[in-house]
Image (cartoon, helix red, strand yellow):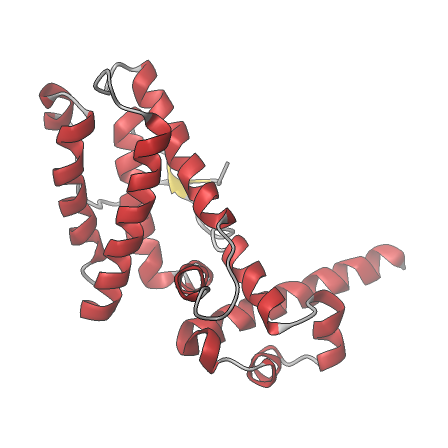
Length: 210
């Protein structure tokens, strides 16, 4: 009985998270109300408040769990793996509602009256780990700071996707990420490494998020 109730509660939380992501993605934080989320999820206010104490708390959950459905490509190693990862995210931003909503809320959060940098730190660490592997493979220039570049990559990616959303609804995001890499790579990698990298989105096999 207890296990059944726990599973039902987990399903309700997941339903609320997905419904909230859809509404936040469509309307943003300011345009979203609890009633709209409840209507989309088809659950009661009591069920929602059992899991989330407020709209802000629900928004924070969407931000922090934005990558729950992302499966990164398993091809390549070192810098190629990092490039593949960023290009895969560009495609995911076009079709993954939870990721898209989480990214939108992360950008909008200061205007919504709350600030949480944790998701940016999480993405920075994902990129840093790939850069550390690139260092092991001898792909980075000697003076590159992996943590610092990872932060700059997150910042550049965030700006690129915001501009892409405004200009084309993110349809041109993969092209923008390719351009971003063309300008960033000479700062971190030798020419012979750059020449063998494939910067195009491609079709790659996903792997489970680490």
